[in-house]
Image (cartoon, rainbow, N blue to C red; front, top):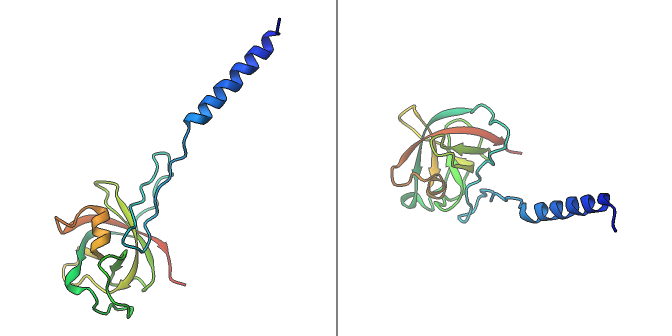
Length: 151
C-alpha cells in the first residue's frame, strides 16, 4: 500500500500540469509602421497608464494627399502608421488612445499640422484612424502619450 503523502504529491503534480496546460500567454500585436499593423490593447492587469502628454481631437487624412511630401521629406503614405503634429519633433513615436473605446495605436510623427481649430491635436494617416475606428466619423477624442523621442 502506498503512503498517503505520495497520493497527495501526485494529486498536486497532476493539478499543476492541468493548470499549466490550460494557461495560455496572451499576445498583443504591436502597432508598427506598416499597413498591416494592428492595435495593441493593454491587458487588464497592466499598470495604470501614465498621464497623457496632450488631450484633444484627432482627425485623419488619406488618399487625396498620397505621395505628397511631408515635413520630414518623405512621401505621405495613407497606409503607414504616421501622423502630423504641430510641435513634436519629427521622428517622435506617440501612442494615440481613444479613452471611450480603449483602442490605441502607435504612430511616428512625420508631418506638421493640424492647422486651424486648436482642439485638434493630431492628424493621423487613414491606417491609424482605421485602427482607432473613427474613419467614418472623421474625428475622435484622443489622448497622446510619448513613446520614444527621435534618435
